[in-house]
Image 1 (cartoon, rainbow, N blue to C red):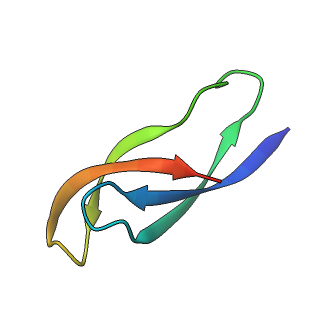
Image 2 (spheres, rainbow, N blue to C red):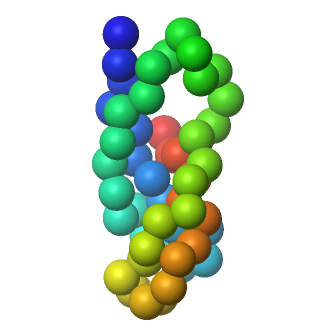
Amino acid sequence: MRELIILECTECKRRNYTSTKEKRNMSGRFEIKKFCKFDRKRTVHKETK
């Protein structure tokens, strides 16, 4: 079962991306480097609830 998650930029605190994750395999918070169009650079994006 896949769950829809929202990714938030750690620098500007805006919610830029959505993604899905497998609940059984990844129990913790999801973190990935993505491009933030507001900061115009690659930043770490974390999963929000």
